[in-house]
Image 1: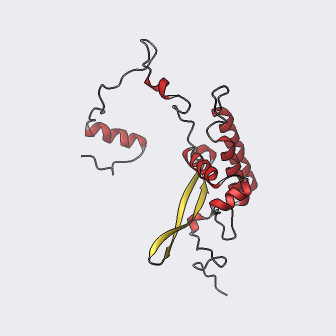
Image 2 (image 1 turned 180 degrees about the vertical axis):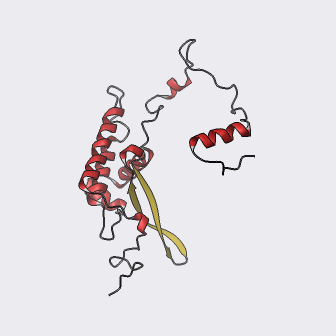
Image 3 (image 1 turned 135 degrees about the vertical axis):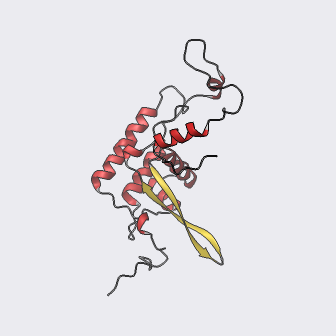
Amino acid sequence: MPIHHRRPARAGCHPVAAWQRQQLGRPARRAIMTTARRLERATHRRGSGRHGGQLRESGLRVLWTLLHRGEGRAGACDPSLAQIAHEALLARSTVQEAVRRLEDAGILLRVPRRAMADGRWVQVTNAYLFQEPAQWRGASDTGFRSALDSDEKPEEGQGGEVLWEGSAAPAVAPERLRGLLEAVGWGSSATIS
């Protein structure tokens, strides 16, 4: 019997593209969860009045739920927000914030999945892809500063070099910009006017 790739795995399920399938073994799941806990501890500041660090407890619970309970029969991690909230014992709005924080940290990528219904596109669910811990973004350099701290000007001799005056950055010569792009690895295919 031939395998039909376009047919969903179960009734009511939507087809899953090959790039949306991600098989994570137990060591990979453990590495992601351990690194996420380390990131949470590293970004937590005691006495700051905040509960937790960059991910917070809700982010860790949502990540654990996605890693261990999220994978469906079709091979994609695509539970609904209500399913994640039920498994993690959180409110749906808290799950949305936690997923946003996980995305901001570079831990996972949310792929909206849509279907055609009555002649218009409707979002059905999201597929979630996990990044390797080496590819995660570090903590933001402005993560815990208040607005008052941001307005303070550094004193003389404390670094805080002013790169330009005014509201707009100075124009960069096209050949300098081309050199910077090549150094970063974007190649010479970038068009600069």
